[in-house]
Image: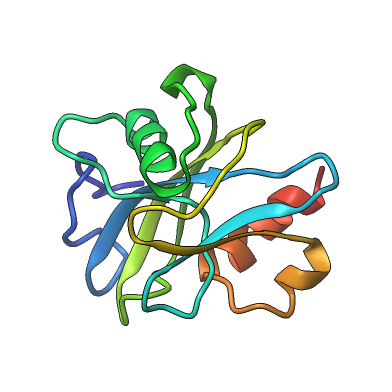
Length: 148
């Protein structure tokens, strides 16, 4: 995308008004087709696990760290499958645009809410239509998993 700077950058992007927020996010679907979502403390909207990069991190390194911090999942950066970069309105920052590097991840072990995460859920496709979820999920992730 033209105008996107290095990971961790939050500023202006050509063709996008307002602030931009750069994140890495995980698309995790279990064996029965449910999507893993998290809800941060003090918010009402569910989103994909992931977060903002720290200085010097690649998108995959960011996601690996965030998965460990947020839900206790140990996934190496080289185990993440890049799916692309997606843009959507930010769920919890009014007027901001999210630019997300999305990776498919497989989680086999136990997970639990940690750090700023208040709730972790596996949602079926039907539940995703009735629960408050981030625009990134409705605009980009649902079409991806419906194609599976």
